[in-house]
Amino acid sequence: MSEQILDVLIVGAGISGVGAARHIKARCPGKKLAVFEALDGFGGTWRVHTYPGIRSDSDLYTFGYRDKPWTGPPIATAQEILTYMGEFIEENDLAPLIHYNHKITRAEWSSAEKLYTVTYETPDGEHTVKARFLWMCQGYYDLDKGYTPDWEGMDSFKGEIVHPQDWPDDIDLSGKKVVVIGSGATAATLVPNIAKSCEHVTMLQRSPTYFSTGRNANDLADELRRLEIDEEWIHTIIRKKALTDQRDFTAAARSDPDAVKKMLFDNIKAVMGEDCDMAPFTPNYRPWRQRIAFVPDGDFFHAVREGQASVVTDHIDRFVPEGIKLKSGEVLEADIIITATGFNLKFLGNILFVVDGQTVDFNERLTWRGMMVEDVPNMLFVFGYFRASWTLRVDLLGDFMVRLLEHMGKTGAAEVRPEVPAGERTLERMSWMDAVDFNPGYLQRGEHLMPKRIDHPEWQHTQDYWHEKDALPEVDLDEASLVYEDASGQLVGKSAANAA
Image 1: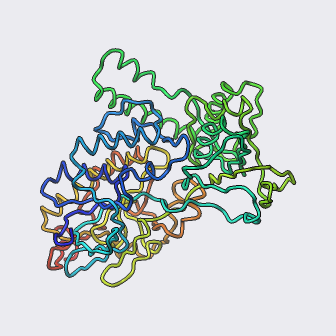
Image 2 (image 1 turned 180 degrees about the horizontal axis):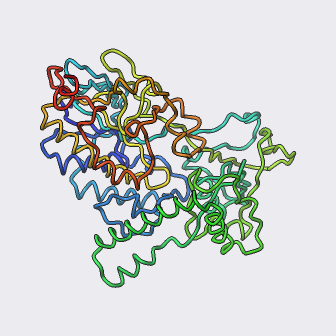
C-alpha cells in the first residue's frame, strides 16, 4: 500500500464509507482507490454497538442506499443492517478496496507535492501512504468510549455500571433491579429488550423526550409486493414517499408544533390507554429541536404499561451503595446501572491535520457547504442529517465528489480548496449549529470541535436535505470561493481568471 499513490483515500467503512466507495469505483473507474477502516470489519456503529435490541432510528428506505433496494421492515436491527451492507459490498465488488485494522492518526498536506502523507497504524506497526484526495467518512462520534457524566459517589455503588457502547458479553440481568439513565433512542430500545429478564427496569430521565410510535411495517410497500411490483420500483416509490412525509412533518413541527405534539401523544395513548399519565413523555421544547426516536410496534410503551418497566423524571444527586439518590430525596435501588447518556462527538475522527507544516484547528475555520473546510485542500467530509436519514447526504456528496473530480481532471487542477473571498473575511464567524435549531447534548458538548459559518450560503451547513437535493447538483464549481491549482502551483480555470 505504501508504494503507490492513491487518487482517493476514503476514511471509514461504515455506512458512509462503503457508499462513498461505490460512487468512486463505479463512476471514476480509473482512480486508484482505497478505504481504511480502524475496526476489524465494516459497519461502524452497527458493529461496535451490541447492546440488546440495537436498531436504527431511521427507516431503511431512506437510510439505505438509493440504488440498493431495502426489503425488510422499516426499522431494522444492527444485524439486518450489517447483512444489507455485506450484500452491497459483494454486489459492487468493494471488498478488495477495504483495508481493516488501519487506524489513521495523521494527515499532512504538502502544497509542493500536491499530496497528503497519511500516517496509519496496523497490528504490525506504523505506516504511511500518499493520497491526492481524502474523503472523510468515519462518522461523527467516538467509537472507543461513550459519554458518561462524572456523578458524585460512583465509586461507592456496589453494583455494576455499564455504558451501552461497551456492552459486556457476559452481563447477567436475570432477576436484577436495573436503572437505565437516559431518555433517548438508546434507552427506549434497551428498556423493552431487557425488561422481561430483569426483576424490574427503571428509565431515569432528567427531562422527557419526544417519541413516535407505530407499526414496524410499511403498508404501501406490502401492498406493492402483493401486486408483485419489482423491488427496485418499490424502493424508489417508498423512498420518495418517506422523504415527502419527513419534509411535511419537519415543516409542521415548525409551523404547528401543537398539532404535531398531539399526534405524537395520541399514538402513545393508543398503546398506553387514554387515561395514562403523559407527564413522563411531555418535553418542555417543541418537536424536532432534538431527534425524535421511533419506537417500533410500541415495545417500550408496552413494557411500561405491563409494569415490567417504569419511568422516573428527576435529577441525580449522587450515587450511593444501593443505587442512585435523586434530588427529590428518593433512592432508586439498583443492582446494575446502565448509562445511556449519549456519546462523545469527534470531528474527522480526531485525526491530526497538518497543511504545509501548520496544524489545522477546525474550530477556527469555516465549513464550506458542510462538506469541505476553509483552506484545507483536497478534503471532503460526510456529515449527515439530523432530521432525515444520515445516508441521504452520502449519496448527494457522492454525486458532488464525482463531479468535482471530473472538473479537476478537465481543468488540470491538482488541488482544490475553499478560500474566503477578501470581501467576506471580516464577517462575524458563528457556530454553524445556531442556524439549524437543533440542540442535543453531544453537539453542545462538542461545539468547540466543529467548524464555524458566516452569513453567506456557501459558508453554511444547512442540515436541510430538501434544499440540498436541488442545490448541491447546481453548485457552480467555478464559484469564487473555490480555488484550483495545477501541479506546479499555478492557478487554473476561473481561479486564474479571478486572480487576474
